[in-house]
Amino acid sequence: MKHRVLKTMMPVLALGLLPAAQAEMSREEFQQLVRETLLEQPEILREAIIKLEEKDKLAQQQQFADQLKQQSGQLFASTTDGIMGNPEGKIEMVYFTDYNCPYCRRMNESLKEVLNSEPELKVIVKDIGILGPDSVQAARLALAAAREAPRQYEELHQALMSQQRVQTATLATIADKAGLDAKALQEKANSKEIADKLTQNMALFRNLGLNGTPALVFPDGTLIPGAIDAAGLKEILKDKQKS
Image (cartoon, rainbow, N blue to C red; front, side, top):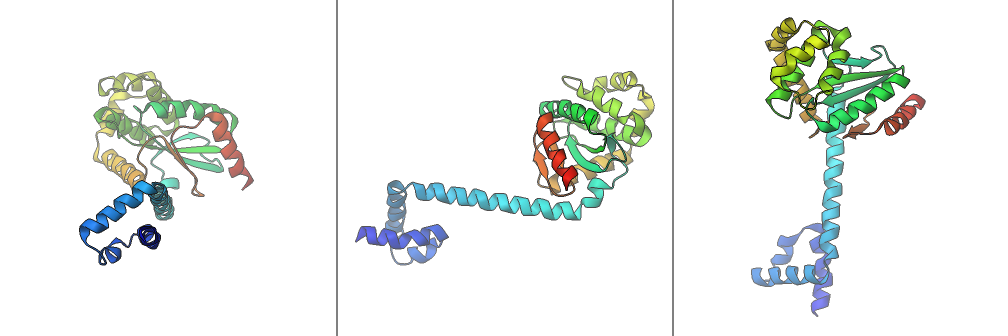
Protein backbone atom coordinates (compact mmCIF):
# COMPACT_ATOMS: atom_id res chain seq x y z
CA MET A 1 0.00 0.00 0.00
CA LYS A 2 2.83 2.36 0.94
CA HIS A 3 4.58 1.91 -2.39
CA ARG A 4 1.33 2.53 -4.24
CA VAL A 5 0.91 5.80 -2.33
CA LEU A 6 4.49 6.75 -3.16
CA LYS A 7 3.92 6.08 -6.86
CA THR A 8 0.86 8.26 -6.70
CA MET A 9 2.85 10.97 -4.98
CA MET A 10 5.69 11.04 -7.50
CA PRO A 11 3.93 13.20 -10.11
CA VAL A 12 2.76 15.47 -7.34
CA LEU A 13 6.28 15.92 -6.01
CA ALA A 14 7.72 16.40 -9.50
CA LEU A 15 5.20 19.09 -10.34
CA GLY A 16 5.64 20.83 -7.02
CA LEU A 17 1.95 20.49 -6.11
CA LEU A 18 2.70 19.75 -2.44
CA PRO A 19 -0.28 21.60 -0.92
CA ALA A 20 -2.75 19.43 -2.87
CA ALA A 21 -1.17 16.23 -1.55
CA GLN A 22 -0.83 17.60 1.95
CA ALA A 23 -4.60 18.22 2.13
CA GLU A 24 -5.18 14.43 2.26
CA MET A 25 -3.03 13.78 5.34
CA SER A 26 -1.69 15.49 8.44
CA ARG A 27 1.34 17.74 8.25
CA GLU A 28 3.46 15.21 10.16
CA GLU A 29 2.39 12.32 7.90
CA PHE A 30 3.05 14.37 4.81
CA GLN A 31 6.53 15.45 5.97
CA GLN A 32 7.39 11.88 6.91
CA LEU A 33 6.19 10.64 3.53
CA VAL A 34 8.32 13.19 1.68
CA ARG A 35 11.34 12.36 3.84
CA GLU A 36 11.00 8.61 3.30
CA THR A 37 10.48 9.07 -0.40
CA LEU A 38 13.62 11.19 -0.80
CA LEU A 39 15.65 8.79 1.32
CA GLU A 40 14.50 5.81 -0.69
CA GLN A 41 14.77 7.55 -4.05
CA PRO A 42 17.36 10.38 -3.76
CA GLU A 43 17.50 10.60 -7.54
CA ILE A 44 14.20 12.49 -7.36
CA LEU A 45 15.92 15.39 -5.62
CA ARG A 46 18.85 15.24 -8.04
CA GLU A 47 16.48 15.37 -11.01
CA ALA A 48 14.58 18.28 -9.46
CA ILE A 49 17.83 20.23 -8.95
CA ILE A 50 18.90 19.57 -12.54
CA LYS A 51 15.52 20.76 -13.83
CA LEU A 52 15.71 23.89 -11.68
CA GLU A 53 19.21 24.64 -12.98
CA GLU A 54 18.04 24.14 -16.56
CA LYS A 55 15.08 26.44 -15.94
CA ASP A 56 17.35 29.09 -14.41
CA LYS A 57 19.77 28.79 -17.34
CA LEU A 58 16.99 29.23 -19.88
CA ALA A 59 15.67 32.24 -17.96
CA GLN A 60 19.15 33.80 -17.90
CA GLN A 61 19.59 33.16 -21.62
CA GLN A 62 16.24 34.79 -22.33
CA GLN A 63 17.09 37.78 -20.14
CA PHE A 64 20.41 38.15 -21.95
CA ALA A 65 18.74 37.95 -25.39
CA ASP A 66 16.08 40.49 -24.42
CA GLN A 67 18.61 42.92 -22.97
CA LEU A 68 20.99 42.49 -25.90
CA LYS A 69 18.21 43.53 -28.24
CA GLN A 70 17.23 46.51 -26.09
CA GLN A 71 20.80 47.67 -25.40
CA SER A 72 22.30 46.95 -28.82
CA GLY A 73 22.86 50.64 -29.58
CA GLN A 74 24.76 51.32 -26.37
CA LEU A 75 26.75 48.14 -26.77
CA PHE A 76 27.86 48.34 -30.39
CA ALA A 77 27.16 51.87 -31.64
CA SER A 78 28.62 53.87 -28.76
CA THR A 79 31.34 56.33 -29.77
CA THR A 80 32.58 56.93 -26.22
CA ASP A 81 34.26 53.59 -25.47
CA GLY A 82 37.82 52.60 -26.16
CA ILE A 83 38.54 50.63 -29.34
CA MET A 84 41.20 48.01 -29.91
CA GLY A 85 42.03 46.59 -33.31
CA ASN A 86 40.41 47.95 -36.46
CA PRO A 87 37.91 50.78 -35.74
CA GLU A 88 36.24 49.97 -39.07
CA GLY A 89 36.47 46.20 -38.69
CA LYS A 90 33.63 44.04 -39.97
CA ILE A 91 33.74 41.71 -36.95
CA GLU A 92 32.59 43.50 -33.80
CA MET A 93 32.99 42.31 -30.25
CA VAL A 94 32.22 43.99 -26.93
CA TYR A 95 34.68 43.30 -24.14
CA PHE A 96 33.75 43.99 -20.50
CA THR A 97 36.89 44.25 -18.40
CA ASP A 98 38.33 45.34 -15.05
CA TYR A 99 42.00 46.30 -14.84
CA ASN A 100 42.49 44.47 -11.55
CA CYS A 101 40.93 41.22 -12.74
CA PRO A 102 43.60 38.49 -13.20
CA TYR A 103 41.36 36.64 -15.66
CA CYS A 104 41.11 39.83 -17.71
CA ARG A 105 44.89 39.96 -17.91
CA ARG A 106 44.83 36.41 -19.25
CA MET A 107 42.08 37.37 -21.71
CA ASN A 108 44.10 40.41 -22.74
CA GLU A 109 47.02 38.21 -23.77
CA SER A 110 44.68 36.15 -25.95
CA LEU A 111 43.22 39.30 -27.50
CA LYS A 112 46.66 40.71 -28.32
CA GLU A 113 47.57 37.52 -30.18
CA VAL A 114 44.25 37.41 -32.04
CA LEU A 115 44.33 41.10 -32.97
CA ASN A 116 47.70 40.57 -34.65
CA SER A 117 46.18 37.99 -37.01
CA GLU A 118 42.61 39.27 -37.43
CA PRO A 119 42.66 42.59 -39.33
CA GLU A 120 38.85 42.80 -39.42
CA LEU A 121 38.35 42.54 -35.66
CA LYS A 122 36.99 45.55 -33.80
CA VAL A 123 37.03 45.21 -30.02
CA ILE A 124 34.76 47.67 -28.20
CA VAL A 125 36.09 47.84 -24.65
CA LYS A 126 33.52 48.43 -21.92
CA ASP A 127 35.68 49.55 -19.03
CA ILE A 128 34.06 48.87 -15.66
CA GLY A 129 35.24 48.84 -12.05
CA ILE A 130 33.89 45.98 -9.96
CA LEU A 131 36.95 45.13 -7.88
CA GLY A 132 37.17 48.16 -5.63
CA PRO A 133 38.04 51.87 -5.73
CA ASP A 134 41.35 51.37 -7.57
CA SER A 135 39.51 49.53 -10.36
CA VAL A 136 36.96 52.34 -10.57
CA GLN A 137 39.67 54.99 -10.92
CA ALA A 138 41.53 52.94 -13.53
CA ALA A 139 38.32 52.51 -15.54
CA ARG A 140 37.63 56.24 -15.34
CA LEU A 141 41.14 57.01 -16.59
CA ALA A 142 40.70 54.63 -19.52
CA LEU A 143 37.29 56.10 -20.37
CA ALA A 144 38.82 59.58 -20.28
CA ALA A 145 41.50 58.43 -22.74
CA ALA A 146 38.78 57.02 -25.02
CA ARG A 147 37.29 60.53 -25.15
CA GLU A 148 40.41 62.68 -25.19
CA ALA A 149 42.96 60.54 -27.05
CA PRO A 150 41.16 57.63 -28.76
CA ARG A 151 44.17 56.73 -30.91
CA GLN A 152 46.26 56.24 -27.76
CA TYR A 153 43.57 54.37 -25.86
CA GLU A 154 44.94 50.94 -26.71
CA GLU A 155 48.40 51.93 -25.53
CA LEU A 156 47.02 53.03 -22.17
CA HIS A 157 44.87 49.88 -21.95
CA GLN A 158 47.92 47.68 -22.43
CA ALA A 159 49.93 49.72 -19.92
CA LEU A 160 47.19 49.27 -17.30
CA MET A 161 46.86 45.57 -18.07
CA SER A 162 50.61 45.06 -17.66
CA GLN A 163 50.37 45.92 -13.96
CA GLN A 164 50.11 43.17 -11.40
CA ARG A 165 47.82 45.43 -9.41
CA VAL A 166 46.62 48.85 -10.58
CA GLN A 167 46.55 51.42 -7.80
CA THR A 168 45.14 54.94 -7.91
CA ALA A 169 48.47 56.38 -6.76
CA THR A 170 50.29 54.99 -9.81
CA LEU A 171 47.78 55.97 -12.51
CA ALA A 172 49.50 59.26 -13.38
CA THR A 173 52.84 57.47 -13.89
CA ILE A 174 51.20 54.81 -16.08
CA ALA A 175 49.51 57.49 -18.20
CA ASP A 176 52.81 59.37 -18.62
CA LYS A 177 54.60 56.21 -19.73
CA ALA A 178 51.83 55.60 -22.26
CA GLY A 179 52.60 59.01 -23.79
CA LEU A 180 49.51 60.80 -22.47
CA ASP A 181 49.06 64.06 -20.60
CA ALA A 182 48.43 62.55 -17.18
CA LYS A 183 47.27 65.76 -15.50
CA ALA A 184 44.72 66.62 -18.20
CA LEU A 185 43.57 63.02 -18.40
CA GLN A 186 43.00 62.77 -14.66
CA GLU A 187 41.00 66.00 -14.68
CA LYS A 188 38.78 64.49 -17.36
CA ALA A 189 38.60 61.20 -15.45
CA ASN A 190 37.19 63.05 -12.44
CA SER A 191 34.47 64.79 -14.47
CA LYS A 192 30.74 64.08 -14.25
CA GLU A 193 30.78 63.10 -17.93
CA ILE A 194 33.12 60.20 -17.24
CA ALA A 195 31.31 59.26 -14.03
CA ASP A 196 28.07 59.02 -16.02
CA LYS A 197 29.77 56.91 -18.71
CA LEU A 198 31.10 54.48 -16.12
CA THR A 199 27.62 54.24 -14.58
CA GLN A 200 26.20 53.50 -18.03
CA ASN A 201 28.73 50.71 -18.62
CA MET A 202 27.99 49.23 -15.21
CA ALA A 203 24.25 49.31 -15.94
CA LEU A 204 24.80 47.48 -19.24
CA PHE A 205 26.89 44.88 -17.46
CA ARG A 206 24.18 44.24 -14.85
CA ASN A 207 21.25 44.41 -17.27
CA LEU A 208 22.83 41.69 -19.39
CA GLY A 209 22.90 39.48 -16.31
CA LEU A 210 26.71 39.36 -16.24
CA ASN A 211 28.38 38.84 -12.88
CA GLY A 212 32.07 38.72 -13.63
CA THR A 213 34.86 39.80 -15.94
CA PRO A 214 36.03 39.24 -18.57
CA ALA A 215 32.94 38.86 -20.72
CA LEU A 216 32.80 38.95 -24.52
CA VAL A 217 29.57 39.74 -26.38
CA PHE A 218 28.95 39.47 -30.13
CA PRO A 219 26.07 41.12 -32.04
CA ASP A 220 24.50 37.73 -32.84
CA GLY A 221 24.06 37.03 -29.14
CA THR A 222 27.12 34.89 -28.57
CA LEU A 223 28.36 35.34 -25.01
CA ILE A 224 31.72 34.18 -23.70
CA PRO A 225 31.79 34.57 -19.91
CA GLY A 226 35.32 34.26 -18.60
CA ALA A 227 38.75 34.05 -20.18
CA ILE A 228 39.36 32.04 -23.33
CA ASP A 229 42.65 31.20 -25.02
CA ALA A 230 43.67 32.62 -28.39
CA ALA A 231 43.02 29.36 -30.24
CA GLY A 232 39.48 29.14 -28.90
CA LEU A 233 38.76 32.75 -29.75
CA LYS A 234 40.11 32.31 -33.28
CA GLU A 235 37.73 29.39 -33.82
CA ILE A 236 34.80 31.52 -32.73
CA LEU A 237 35.89 34.31 -35.05
CA LYS A 238 36.10 31.87 -37.97
CA ASP A 239 32.46 31.02 -37.39
CA LYS A 240 31.56 34.72 -37.34
CA GLN A 241 33.34 35.26 -40.66
CA LYS A 242 31.35 32.41 -42.26
CA SER A 243 27.99 33.74 -41.10
